[in-house]
Image 1: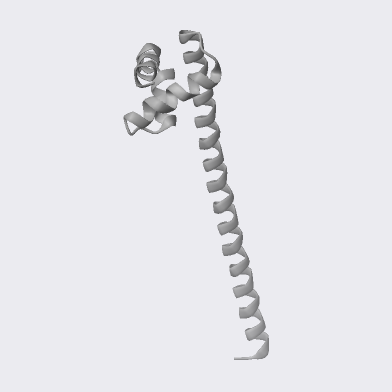
Image 2 (image 1 turned 90 degrees about the horizontal axis):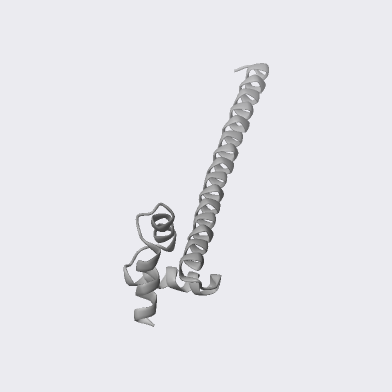
Length: 104
């Protein structure tokens, strides 16, 4: 191959490499954004569930969190899932509060 052709091929390979690296960086950033958004949504849902329990049981937010956590632990259910179910009305606040009082 001529030197000019080698330089052109190298330039094309470098350009392709840069494109691939940029695509990977964008993909990683998108993935991180999705993970952070998911974590934020779970956190907000847990805070909402604590508020529901605090209001329903006339307890402070710490006690509401303990009840929520205890309920999930004894059912091997993630805290975020219990919180979502409570906020969506799938679990009644009294079920969680009564369970917490009876255990403890």
